[in-house]
Image 1 (cartoon, rainbow, N blue to C red):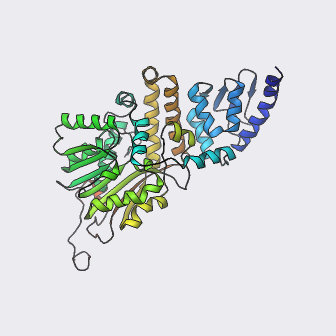
Image 2 (cartoon, rainbow, N blue to C red):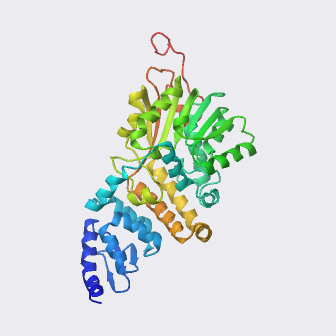
Length: 415
């Protein structure tokens, strides 16, 4: 009884100290019915309800990790604006505890060899196609959409993203395109159907590959699109264009030069490439709870870190676009659909897993809106290849890219 009274007495002051570290956010805390801690000088946008004393101490010792653990377990509830609360937390300057910093350092030991890559993919993507069908768009595109207008539907914005990628690559009929990390096949099928190219796509997720192959058969594109269940390091042959959308986050920073060497091995002399990835404005690990519970081994790179793909392997970057705001809106669509399907999701994966993914989606919205995470699309080619679009008009108009005749001796446009 004495320990319980001590916890009730000491808990609120420690929690107040934690809130000051977070910049005094407008959040009310309800402590298992014993105490209510109101924000100073403002109205709360949300109430965090803790179920017991142990939940409070866990939150105080390691808030970055334990918030997610307690939320998933149902021992911490958020009433009100969850996204807004997380956005304030992400935007506030704070320093991790020594324990958290040590655990972050240990997490660098995660491996990214082919076996680990397959295991990491199975942890997330092999939850089952029926799970993702409940909250993704009809084409099952699980990457940032592109909204020509913020009022566009998610379905239209995902088609616009697929086309945006194809135009940036300046695809030409009957070219061969290699794709690394093909998801459920939407981009490969779009490239083949609308741009007349042939596609070979590699993916380590068995569930996704099976789904993509079935779609290719149903849509009459199996003769033009091949889905290969294998790691990106097994990519072989020769291609006119190389594309990777949403895979670099899982490659591991130490493997970027290896990925670049793979592209160097397969890309034609006048080939083009595009890498689409979640990134950071400055080097920073993914939130440890998200990395361990949702995306094992994931790391969002900075633009400077991405250059390890290009610089050592003789590539030059032609264009970079940051679609951060588009991803924030994409994730808002996902979160709304997820919550609308909550009864079916909870019945399918259980309450704890359902809460885990709700928090992950809310955190995704918050992180992009707080500008702590970016979305980069980088277009590249080989150094020395001057057979590239003269302007960016083809990206916005959809007209064929004007490459122009090239003087073979000087590499300059023949005028």
